Length: 390
Ligand SMILES: Cc1ncc(COP(=O)(O)O)c(C=O)c1O
Image (cartoon, rainbow, N blue to C red; front, side, top):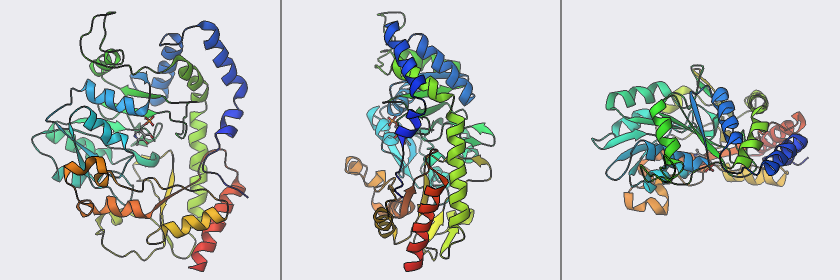
């Protein structure tokens, strides 16, 4: 039985009639830029994310850029962020002229190691970007404490985590801005590119709203240099349909993640990640052959990815799964401090040993909501056979 990594045809096909009628409504309205569809989506999104304000934008990347611009971050500033993340997190910091300062990640949550970040604070540090990677909330107690101590802005990169919670509070609402992406692979995926910024702060919202349209307010009066960061009315209308299912999508993923953990944790050679792993030196040889993801007790994850660690044998497991018709993916094979475009920052691979090591060990398994239980079993059986054979 083939198990793809994602099945968007199944997800969108189930909503075909509603999506087509949203499309037709926009087509007939002739209103394609901002306007009522965008405003409705922003209201619904703010409610879903329990945020005071939501601003629809063109992508998660543009949401990050807009947040940095709205906070006035630029040349001479340093921004703390993980190295083990998607490129946009740090790319946007460079695009506003600031310096990304790469920090270690925790092998427990794959998220920012805040103790390491604390060691990298300088008088030029202006902001910190915790990424809630794979839908797992970062340790926001530690992030907020560090930010308070050094008066840093907090931009939560919740591109993969809309709906995840930290101490029952939705991620994205704990810092200055929360970034959402509706890239089709996200738990709430558009039919193209789209994103959003959420914030609790009126002044941040107003500034971002104006920067979204070239810093223009009122018409043809430009207060600041912004950009075109608007979400399409069409994507907003389509997302409004899918937003009504977002909690169900998240719950479906959590159910599959629970099945994976229950089945795989019983296999010889497998174990759950443990909080204590964070204290383990990155050079320690791991005895377990498969390490399963956990959520910290303070958090609720939305499982955008179910990512396991396979010390020493990741590529072999991936090849084995491929041969069995099971898709998997490596998010992310090269940490950002080792990317060519950041070479001028002078970081060596061994400067962030966990980020480096994780990139060589991680493997994400199919966890999309439309998976059948039989497909989850298929993935587990294939992994069990791999562990038996090696
Ligand atoms: C952690 C993270 N940050 C930012 C982004 C950027 O979002 P987008 O692809 O919508 O520009 C993504 C999406 O891939 C992401 O996963």
